[in-house]
Length: 249
Image (cartoon, rainbow, N blue to C red; front, top):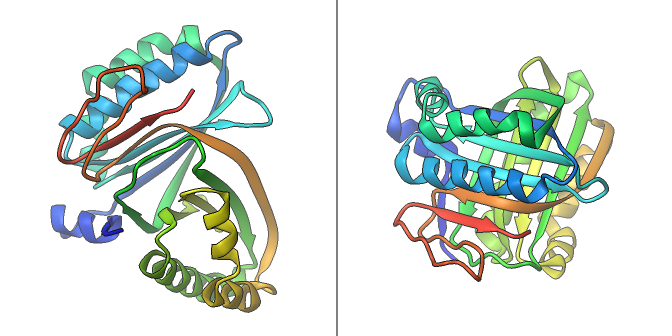
């Protein structure tokens, strides 16, 4: 499979001086509103990726241990692109519907982008998505960052079964890292874990990690700047040369 981009490179091409905006949201979904929430999320994501060149990725996830808890990961080329999105009709519609589909549980975490790369792929219900939170000892922050970026780049270059890898650090607590990954399936993930570069990553960073939490999530809606689009199997295919969407509910 061909790698489409790293977001850092894409962002630089859009605005040399701009810093990418990476956001992570934890959202409570109201009882009985899961389908409505993901339909609104799909509309927001699909329209934004199609119409906003500075909206690079929007991914809606569901916490498998609690279907009433959702996550949203977003990436924008810069602050201007983020403000354009916030003023868009589809985002305003999302805000309008929020009181009906969301609870008061809303947690926003601004992130600093450390790595993002994705490939063209055909989404499926067997693909594996990982969301991992890691806390690093402060004295190892720079060294850990270099090791992570190197390992992720090697993995993206060498492993066809890895479709997306992303990493960010919390702006208010940069020793907290957030990782998000999409694999073709569980087998691809297990194969990745056995690779020399991943084993080297584990060995080099073992003493650097204070805490690690892996959240069981599944992708409900995915939008990234790839080369095709897909919706529910029962719906008409929506296609655009710069986007990919997935709705699996």
